[in-house]
Amino acid sequence: MLIGRQHSSRCAGRLFFRLRPAVASMIVTCAMLCTSPPPTHAQVGEPDIEYQVKAAFLYNFAKFVAWPDGTFASKTEPLALCIVGDDPFGEPLHAVLAGRKAHGRLTLLKILEEPTNDDGCHIAFVSAPDGPRMARLMQRLKGRTVLTVGDSEAFAANGGMVRLLIENKKTRFDINTHSAGLVGITFNSQLLSLARRVRE
Image 1 (cartoon, rainbow, N blue to C red):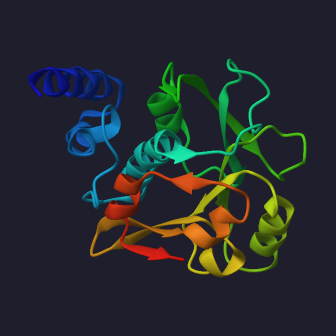
Image 2 (image 1 turned 30 degrees about the horizontal axis):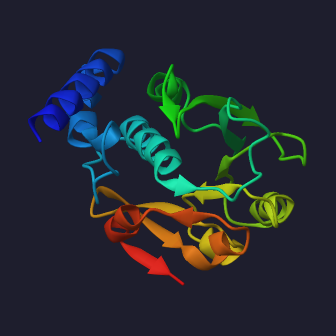
C-alpha cells in the first residue's frame, strides 16, 4: 500500500511542476491520475482552470476504458485523443498527455475540424455548441469504435458516451453505457462507480 502512495505522490509532483501553480493543487486533488480513476468532483473557478481539470479527466478516461479487439492495428500503435471542432483546452491538455501512456500505449493528441474515417481517433472530445454542427459531428462518429466525450447539454441526446459537466462549481461526468456498448466499448467498474449518472 505504501508503494502505491509513493508512486502516486511522484506522479502528482511531476504534474505539479508542469502546470501552473494555481492549478497544481487542484490537479493534485485529481492526482489519482497515476494510479486510479478521476475523483467524483474537482473544484472549478474560472474557464481556463475548468478545462485544465477536464484535460486531467480525459487522460483518466483513456486509462479506464477498454476498446474491442482489433481496434488497434498493432501493439505499439499510439492511443489517439482527438479534439473535434473547437479546441477549448490549448496547452493544458498537451501538458497532461506529454510522454504519458494508457494501456501501455503512448498518448497522441490530434486537433480536427471534422472527423473522418481515417483519422485514427480512439477518443474524441466533441467541442461544438448544441445544434446542427454538433449533430453533424456526432453523426460522422456514429458506429465507430471511438469513445465520444463532450460537455454540451444535448451531448447525450446526440449519442455521446461521456458527458462532462459543471455542477455546484465541481466537474462531474455522466456515462452512457448503451451508446458505448453499441460499438463494443466498455468502462472499468471503478470509473462507473464514480460517475454522477450511468445511463444504460
